[in-house]
Amino acid sequence: MPTTETTALTTALERDYGLPGAVLERLPIGQVTVNYRARFPDRAVLFVKHYPAGADLAAERSAIAQSRLAGEHGVPVATARASLDGQVITEHDGHAISVWEWVEGRTVEDGLNPAQQRAAGRALGTIHRAFVGHPAAASASSKLERWMNPDIQKLEATVDKLLGMVNERAQRDDFDEQALRTLAERRAVLHRIPGLIAGLPELSTQVLHGDYSAVNLLFDGDTLTAVLDFLPPDPFLTAYELGRIAFDPRAVVLHEDWITSGVRLVGAYLETNPDLPAADVRACARVALLQLMTSLYGVKQHYMEPGLLQDDLDQFWLLRHAAAQRLLERLEEVEAALGEAAARHGR
Image (cartoon, rainbow, N blue to C red; front, side):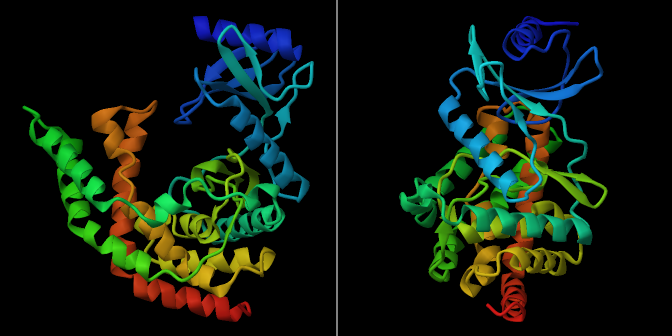
């Protein structure tokens, strides 16, 4: 049944892209944009992103340019289709959309297998090598200083506030009980964050993909068919992006051999970006751990401002928390394995 929103989008597709007769199906993916599969009378299929009101469309256009740049260097990406007047994002009557060629594939929700790990690692290495000389790299990172100096007292206060909100509920459901447990566990280890940061070596920064995670990788079997959802160029720790995918929470929690898996992905990365310093390689798991420990993403939204797909965010919080616990317990072992991987690749 068409809605006011889908009617506006089908009108935009015909008017701005010369694509009449679209039938839109909303997809249950994405926490920022509302996403659709668009089917047309000639059986063509496209992907449509509908941006929320107030979205920074200049930044979104910059992100699309990043995707194109990666594609020019051989990374499999989805292709944004330009409108009839050459725009990658069109705006009319409060609606802004981009239109993309449909790419077959699926996201892997239970941890990448060895072939997929190697594909993901090689693609990320190619992206970093392509972006290393990006003009935006000369600017100061907008978030690195904050990341290196997290406000632990504020984190503790937020955890305490969330615990209070859960405890005040007259009736608690299963997620409330899990939130009480995981928030208490997180509260108990926040004091370790400064020491973990102090143990970091000097690390390199550059322009990154920005959100290189399993949900933004499409696979057809073991073949990586597309890297999706690049962010605007903003230099940050190279080790952050490598560690985030190598020690993806799904792999860390769901696979017993997660250390071997992570090191395998890092090794594949070094095949296409062999110049990454050994210090960055060894530190990537610690950086990933720190990102997890300082984030309340998912549980915070649940109690303060629910997201578009909050059930997914709830499960993501539980997954990320469990991954943080495992990484913290075995960090010394992980870093030793990463050091050996760097040495094998001559770093």
